Image 1 (cartoon, rainbow, N blue to C red):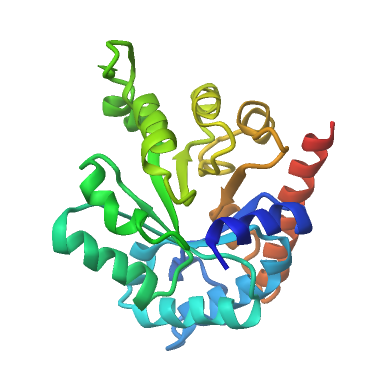
Image 2: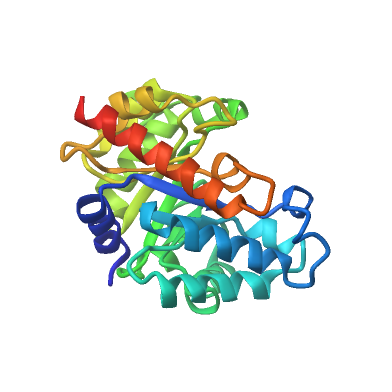
Length: 277
């Protein structure tokens, strides 16, 4: 199933816009898991199994696995999601960006090695750096646009002129270019941070119903109501609202997976209540 079709199914049939981020930090694991040889996989698997019913997507962050030399655990985890929770798409959060054969290998890493359904990439090296991903029509390509960190404004908000001579911030130029020129296969999405809801709204107006991955809820201070007010698509969906630490580390005891489920359900229910109001 194409990434965008799977995502649409989760939005429409399962009524959830919650993306569960998988960022393992062993120091925050329950005491019973710490020091165990397979702790990273066991922790993430428990979170996945507890929250799959509530998720529109899972988003493992590759650096959290690679820094621990746990790439094999990441492969097993994605295989587990596909086997046990088919229909819940997996976004590999790697933010790759390069050209030529290197870009080709990054695409193979995401889609062949890890079997991800979508991947985050950095578009700031231009179309040729994104092309190996874009040509995979069945896979999602989620491009950085207006990110959730304050430092994103250093470059993303700089004024640029387009071909017509009109001036607008760089992130808006990226959004318009992706929506109108790069989305030939209908497989593009954009990263737009919850911490800048008005700018998220500017992106939404430029890209129509293009899916938006929205980090920054919870620990980073993003507000759910503001995200929905500015970011919902015309069909009342269009968003993957990501929560990582707020769900993963909702509990620290033996019931950590149940605590994660409760946090994911609370976020889903809050989103749906606000959508209906």
